[in-house]
Amino acid sequence: MKIKSFQGGFDKNLSYLIWCESTRNAALVDASVNSNTIIDFINNNDLFLSKILITHTHSDHIYFLNDFLFQFPQLQICCFELTEYNFNFDFRKIKHYEIITIGTELITCLHTPGHYPDSLCFWNENSNSLFTGDTMFIGRTGRTISRKSNINDLYNSIYNVVLKLPPKTIIYPGHHYGHILQITLKENILISSFFRCADKYEFIKVMQEYEKNREKT
Image (cartoon, rainbow, N blue to C red):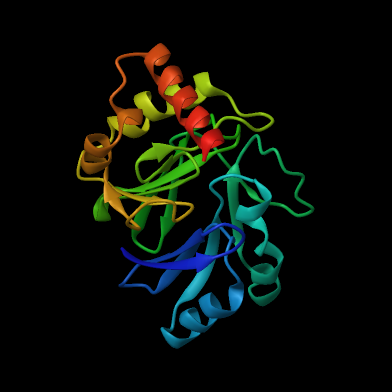
């Protein structure tokens, strides 16, 4: 599977265009970056955009959704079945561990609530790629300070779902908050105490310390 990242949006957002090399069938992970550059890339590389995969429905991750739907009205929008957003159109209601096809590529959808209840990660085993939205960044997790966030859910999503994937899995986050754009799961564990906690209580303490230090800066 091929991957092209695009940065923009409200806060160093990242959208990812992913496609099957043999069929040229493509999907976009999050409509969080202005559509013009992405559509130009699609057209210049003879790709067929068939799906948009939504990591969660915070407004910055779906802000440009209607722009893509205007250009590609046949698009299938894929979002967690119990979405927090009231879409005014039909969408594919994704379940935990559901498989999505992009040409000949298989995408496993993982429900990873915590930062937001309808958070999904998208895993392609063939390319060792995991698109994490705001569940996991370079060096830390997403935050749990906003309405509907839940730190207990996030702990479970990180430690019982994401960290169970192969260590060589490459993390593609929803924002460019780190010193690099991508990192392997193994490397992310090594550089961050967020991912080396002995239990939920230690994880909560690490999260609290992070928020306390943010307040000082």
